[in-house]
Amino acid sequence: CALVTSSGCLSVLREIETRDKLEVLYRMNLYPEAVDVATTANMPAADVMDIYTMFGDHLYNKCDWAGAAEQYARAIGRLEPSYVVSRFLEAQRFQNLADYLEV
Image 1 (tube, helix red, strand yellow):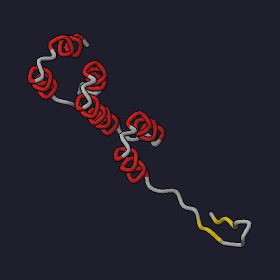
Image 2 (image 1 turned 90 degrees about the vertical axis):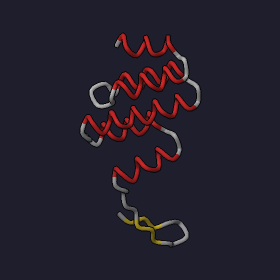
Image 3 (image 1 turned 90 degrees about the horizontal axis):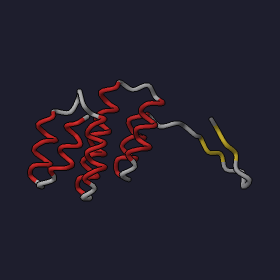
């Protein structure tokens, strides 16, 4: 697609690949938007669950324990439960661990 600006410059527009879009969103910590891009692009469920895991890690690192548990729960089936259990035990976040285990 080409675009001619009012100053007469010709610009060529091209859409970037989905993986490249996702990398930009990851760098900006825009995980909900990354999930939207991945689902709209019909990426495999495992890839979407990986995004939920990254989002959970991001929230965990920001001490948003409840948010992290919610995102980890969305990755059940892809994310090893031992990973989540060890993270919450390490931080002594027993209620958040219980919340995750109840899902």
